[in-house]
Length: 287
Image 1 (tube, one colour):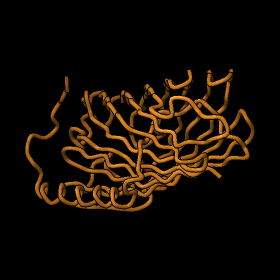
Image 2 (cartoon, rainbow, N blue to C red):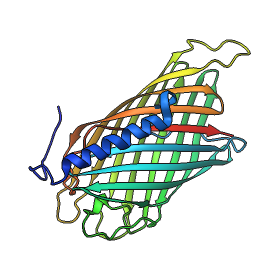
Image 3 (cartoon, helix red, strand yellow):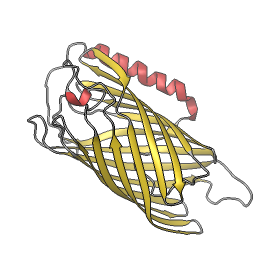
Image 4 (cartoon, rainbow, N blue to C red):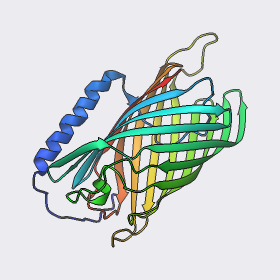
Protein backbone atom coordinates (compact mmCIF):
# COMPACT_ATOMS: atom_id res chain seq x y z
CA UNK A 1 0.00 0.00 0.00
CA UNK A 2 1.31 3.47 -0.86
CA UNK A 3 1.12 5.76 2.14
CA UNK A 4 0.92 9.46 1.24
CA UNK A 5 0.76 12.70 3.16
CA UNK A 6 0.22 15.58 0.77
CA UNK A 7 2.25 18.76 1.15
CA UNK A 8 0.61 20.76 -1.66
CA UNK A 9 -2.62 19.74 -3.32
CA UNK A 10 -2.36 21.85 -6.48
CA UNK A 11 -0.29 21.32 -9.62
CA UNK A 12 2.55 23.88 -9.53
CA UNK A 13 2.79 26.55 -12.19
CA UNK A 14 5.00 25.35 -15.01
CA UNK A 15 4.58 21.75 -13.86
CA UNK A 16 3.93 20.43 -17.38
CA UNK A 17 7.10 22.07 -18.69
CA UNK A 18 9.04 20.69 -15.70
CA UNK A 19 7.80 17.15 -16.42
CA UNK A 20 8.69 17.50 -20.10
CA UNK A 21 12.21 18.65 -19.19
CA UNK A 22 12.56 15.73 -16.80
CA UNK A 23 11.38 13.25 -19.43
CA UNK A 24 13.82 14.64 -21.99
CA UNK A 25 16.66 14.46 -19.46
CA UNK A 26 15.89 10.85 -18.54
CA UNK A 27 15.66 9.85 -22.22
CA UNK A 28 19.02 11.51 -22.72
CA UNK A 29 20.45 9.38 -19.94
CA UNK A 30 19.06 6.25 -21.56
CA UNK A 31 20.63 7.29 -24.85
CA UNK A 32 23.94 7.99 -23.15
CA UNK A 33 24.19 4.51 -21.66
CA UNK A 34 22.30 2.78 -24.49
CA UNK A 35 21.36 -0.86 -24.31
CA UNK A 36 24.43 -1.52 -22.14
CA UNK A 37 22.98 0.08 -18.99
CA UNK A 38 22.13 -2.24 -16.13
CA UNK A 39 21.14 -2.12 -12.44
CA UNK A 40 22.36 0.33 -9.84
CA UNK A 41 22.70 -1.19 -6.40
CA UNK A 42 22.49 1.34 -3.56
CA UNK A 43 23.21 -1.03 -0.69
CA UNK A 44 26.93 -1.38 -0.01
CA UNK A 45 28.60 -4.73 -0.49
CA UNK A 46 30.56 -5.74 2.60
CA UNK A 47 33.56 -6.81 0.51
CA UNK A 48 36.68 -4.69 0.32
CA UNK A 49 38.21 -3.62 -2.97
CA UNK A 50 41.69 -5.02 -3.49
CA UNK A 51 44.50 -2.44 -3.44
CA UNK A 52 45.45 -3.78 -6.88
CA UNK A 53 41.93 -3.11 -8.23
CA UNK A 54 40.80 0.52 -7.88
CA UNK A 55 37.31 1.23 -9.23
CA UNK A 56 35.71 4.14 -11.02
CA UNK A 57 31.92 4.48 -11.22
CA UNK A 58 29.91 6.83 -13.41
CA UNK A 59 26.30 7.11 -12.29
CA UNK A 60 23.20 9.05 -13.33
CA UNK A 61 20.13 9.09 -11.05
CA UNK A 62 16.70 10.66 -11.49
CA UNK A 63 14.71 11.52 -8.32
CA UNK A 64 11.36 13.02 -9.41
CA UNK A 65 8.85 14.38 -6.91
CA UNK A 66 5.48 16.10 -6.96
CA UNK A 67 6.92 19.63 -6.58
CA UNK A 68 10.61 19.27 -7.52
CA UNK A 69 12.89 17.00 -9.53
CA UNK A 70 16.53 16.18 -8.84
CA UNK A 71 18.90 14.73 -11.44
CA UNK A 72 22.33 13.63 -10.19
CA UNK A 73 25.45 12.75 -12.14
CA UNK A 74 28.21 11.24 -9.99
CA UNK A 75 31.79 10.15 -10.46
CA UNK A 76 32.82 7.73 -7.69
CA UNK A 77 36.37 6.54 -7.13
CA UNK A 78 37.24 3.67 -4.73
CA UNK A 79 40.64 2.50 -3.56
CA UNK A 80 41.49 -0.39 -1.25
CA UNK A 81 44.28 0.62 1.09
CA UNK A 82 44.68 -3.03 2.11
CA UNK A 83 42.34 -6.06 2.25
CA UNK A 84 40.48 -4.58 5.25
CA UNK A 85 40.29 -0.84 4.54
CA UNK A 86 38.81 1.11 1.65
CA UNK A 87 38.33 4.81 0.90
CA UNK A 88 35.89 6.29 -1.60
CA UNK A 89 35.27 9.78 -2.99
CA UNK A 90 32.08 11.04 -4.65
CA UNK A 91 32.00 14.06 -6.98
CA UNK A 92 28.36 14.98 -7.76
CA UNK A 93 26.78 17.31 -10.30
CA UNK A 94 23.16 18.18 -9.46
CA UNK A 95 20.30 19.59 -11.56
CA UNK A 96 17.35 20.78 -9.45
CA UNK A 97 14.01 21.79 -11.01
CA UNK A 98 11.34 23.43 -8.84
CA UNK A 99 8.09 25.01 -10.10
CA UNK A 100 9.53 25.74 -13.54
CA UNK A 101 12.87 27.04 -12.18
CA UNK A 102 16.12 25.17 -12.79
CA UNK A 103 19.45 25.33 -10.99
CA UNK A 104 22.54 23.23 -11.73
CA UNK A 105 26.05 22.88 -10.36
CA UNK A 106 28.39 20.98 -8.07
CA UNK A 107 26.71 19.15 -5.20
CA UNK A 108 28.18 18.20 -1.82
CA UNK A 109 31.37 16.17 -2.25
CA UNK A 110 31.30 12.87 -0.34
CA UNK A 111 34.09 10.99 1.45
CA UNK A 112 33.61 7.42 2.69
CA UNK A 113 35.65 4.89 4.63
CA UNK A 114 34.95 1.16 5.00
CA UNK A 115 36.64 -1.23 7.45
CA UNK A 116 36.19 -4.99 7.26
CA UNK A 117 35.45 -6.22 10.80
CA UNK A 118 34.99 -9.88 9.91
CA UNK A 119 35.44 -11.87 6.71
CA UNK A 120 35.04 -15.59 6.02
CA UNK A 121 35.51 -16.66 2.40
CA UNK A 122 35.14 -20.16 0.96
CA UNK A 123 34.44 -21.78 -2.39
CA UNK A 124 31.49 -19.77 -3.81
CA UNK A 125 30.62 -18.62 -0.27
CA UNK A 126 31.41 -15.49 1.69
CA UNK A 127 30.36 -13.75 4.91
CA UNK A 128 31.54 -10.17 5.46
CA UNK A 129 30.74 -7.62 8.14
CA UNK A 130 31.99 -4.03 7.77
CA UNK A 131 31.94 -0.62 9.44
CA UNK A 132 31.08 2.41 7.29
CA UNK A 133 32.01 6.05 8.03
CA UNK A 134 30.61 8.79 5.78
CA UNK A 135 31.16 12.54 5.45
CA UNK A 136 30.01 15.23 3.04
CA UNK A 137 31.54 18.68 2.50
CA UNK A 138 29.36 21.78 1.87
CA UNK A 139 30.52 22.35 -1.70
CA UNK A 140 27.05 22.71 -3.25
CA UNK A 141 25.14 26.00 -3.41
CA UNK A 142 22.52 26.11 -0.65
CA UNK A 143 21.11 29.63 -0.29
CA UNK A 144 18.76 30.17 -3.24
CA UNK A 145 15.53 31.45 -1.59
CA UNK A 146 13.44 30.25 -4.54
CA UNK A 147 14.11 26.58 -3.74
CA UNK A 148 13.11 24.59 -0.62
CA UNK A 149 16.05 23.33 1.49
CA UNK A 150 15.96 19.72 0.26
CA UNK A 151 15.87 20.91 -3.37
CA UNK A 152 19.08 22.97 -3.03
CA UNK A 153 22.27 21.72 -4.68
CA UNK A 154 23.85 21.16 -1.25
CA UNK A 155 23.09 21.32 2.47
CA UNK A 156 25.41 24.25 3.19
CA UNK A 157 26.87 22.38 6.15
CA UNK A 158 29.12 19.33 6.67
CA UNK A 159 27.47 16.02 7.52
CA UNK A 160 28.85 12.96 9.28
CA UNK A 161 27.54 9.40 9.30
CA UNK A 162 28.26 5.90 10.49
CA UNK A 163 26.85 2.51 9.56
CA UNK A 164 27.22 -1.26 9.54
CA UNK A 165 26.82 -3.61 6.59
CA UNK A 166 26.66 -7.41 6.42
CA UNK A 167 26.94 -9.32 3.14
CA UNK A 168 26.72 -13.00 2.34
CA UNK A 169 27.24 -15.08 -0.81
CA UNK A 170 25.96 -18.61 -1.36
CA UNK A 171 26.79 -19.61 -4.94
CA UNK A 172 24.04 -17.99 -7.08
CA UNK A 173 22.52 -16.12 -4.13
CA UNK A 174 23.81 -13.08 -2.27
CA UNK A 175 22.28 -10.61 0.15
CA UNK A 176 23.32 -7.43 1.90
CA UNK A 177 21.92 -5.62 4.96
CA UNK A 178 22.92 -2.04 5.80
CA UNK A 179 21.99 0.15 8.78
CA UNK A 180 23.35 3.68 9.08
CA UNK A 181 22.80 7.21 10.35
CA UNK A 182 23.76 10.57 8.78
CA UNK A 183 23.70 13.87 10.70
CA UNK A 184 24.12 17.32 9.12
CA UNK A 185 26.03 19.53 11.54
CA UNK A 186 24.11 22.78 11.03
CA UNK A 187 21.46 24.82 9.17
CA UNK A 188 18.61 23.10 11.01
CA UNK A 189 18.67 19.85 9.02
CA UNK A 190 17.55 16.68 10.79
CA UNK A 191 19.51 13.44 10.95
CA UNK A 192 18.50 10.51 8.73
CA UNK A 193 18.52 6.81 9.59
CA UNK A 194 18.80 4.45 6.61
CA UNK A 195 17.97 0.75 6.40
CA UNK A 196 18.78 -0.93 3.09
CA UNK A 197 18.15 -4.56 2.21
CA UNK A 198 19.28 -6.13 -1.06
CA UNK A 199 19.08 -9.56 -2.70
CA UNK A 200 20.92 -10.65 -5.84
CA UNK A 201 20.34 -13.82 -7.88
CA UNK A 202 22.76 -14.90 -10.62
CA UNK A 203 20.59 -15.62 -13.64
CA UNK A 204 23.52 -16.84 -15.71
CA UNK A 205 25.70 -18.74 -15.86
CA UNK A 206 24.29 -21.44 -13.61
CA UNK A 207 27.91 -22.45 -12.91
CA UNK A 208 31.25 -21.09 -14.09
CA UNK A 209 33.04 -23.20 -16.69
CA UNK A 210 36.66 -23.99 -15.89
CA UNK A 211 39.16 -21.58 -17.47
CA UNK A 212 36.38 -19.42 -18.92
CA UNK A 213 34.93 -16.02 -17.95
CA UNK A 214 31.37 -15.88 -19.31
CA UNK A 215 29.17 -12.81 -19.02
CA UNK A 216 27.52 -12.79 -15.60
CA UNK A 217 23.92 -11.55 -15.28
CA UNK A 218 22.23 -10.89 -11.92
CA UNK A 219 18.72 -9.85 -10.98
CA UNK A 220 18.58 -7.45 -8.02
CA UNK A 221 15.81 -6.45 -5.62
CA UNK A 222 16.38 -3.75 -3.01
CA UNK A 223 14.35 -2.16 -0.25
CA UNK A 224 15.71 1.33 0.48
CA UNK A 225 14.40 3.01 3.63
CA UNK A 226 14.97 6.41 5.27
CA UNK A 227 13.61 7.80 8.55
CA UNK A 228 14.22 11.53 9.01
CA UNK A 229 13.75 13.56 12.17
CA UNK A 230 11.81 16.81 12.54
CA UNK A 231 13.24 19.80 10.67
CA UNK A 232 12.11 23.35 9.79
CA UNK A 233 8.95 22.94 11.86
CA UNK A 234 7.85 19.81 9.99
CA UNK A 235 7.21 16.44 11.71
CA UNK A 236 9.47 13.39 11.26
CA UNK A 237 8.97 11.43 8.06
CA UNK A 238 9.64 8.12 6.34
CA UNK A 239 10.51 7.26 2.75
CA UNK A 240 10.74 3.68 1.42
CA UNK A 241 11.63 2.67 -2.13
CA UNK A 242 11.38 -0.75 -3.77
CA UNK A 243 14.12 -0.95 -6.39
CA UNK A 244 14.27 -3.89 -8.83
CA UNK A 245 17.12 -3.96 -11.29
CA UNK A 246 19.67 -5.86 -13.31
CA UNK A 247 23.46 -6.20 -13.30
CA UNK A 248 25.59 -7.40 -16.21
CA UNK A 249 29.31 -8.16 -15.91
CA UNK A 250 30.70 -8.50 -19.46
CA UNK A 251 34.21 -8.82 -17.97
CA UNK A 252 36.11 -8.47 -14.71
CA UNK A 253 36.92 -4.89 -15.69
CA UNK A 254 33.38 -3.72 -16.45
CA UNK A 255 30.02 -3.83 -14.69
CA UNK A 256 26.83 -2.24 -16.03
CA UNK A 257 23.74 -1.57 -13.91
CA UNK A 258 20.25 -0.10 -14.03
CA UNK A 259 17.34 0.03 -11.61
CA UNK A 260 13.86 1.48 -11.15
CA UNK A 261 13.01 3.15 -7.81
CA UNK A 262 9.34 2.90 -6.82
CA UNK A 263 8.17 4.73 -3.66
CA UNK A 264 5.97 2.42 -1.59
CA UNK A 265 5.63 4.46 1.62
CA UNK A 266 6.36 8.13 2.27
CA UNK A 267 5.46 10.85 4.72
CA UNK A 268 8.21 13.46 4.19
CA UNK A 269 7.01 17.09 4.33
CA UNK A 270 10.02 18.94 2.96
CA UNK A 271 8.71 21.11 0.12
CA UNK A 272 9.48 18.54 -2.59
CA UNK A 273 6.16 16.73 -2.25
CA UNK A 274 5.56 13.03 -2.78
CA UNK A 275 8.41 11.20 -4.49
CA UNK A 276 7.57 9.52 -7.77
CA UNK A 277 9.00 6.65 -9.81
CA UNK A 278 12.65 7.26 -10.71
CA UNK A 279 15.72 5.23 -11.47
CA UNK A 280 19.45 5.17 -12.05
CA UNK A 281 22.07 4.00 -14.52
CA UNK A 282 25.69 3.15 -13.77
CA UNK A 283 28.86 1.86 -15.34
CA UNK A 284 31.70 0.61 -13.09
CA UNK A 285 35.28 0.19 -14.31
CA UNK A 286 37.91 -1.81 -12.45
CA UNK A 287 41.59 -1.20 -13.16
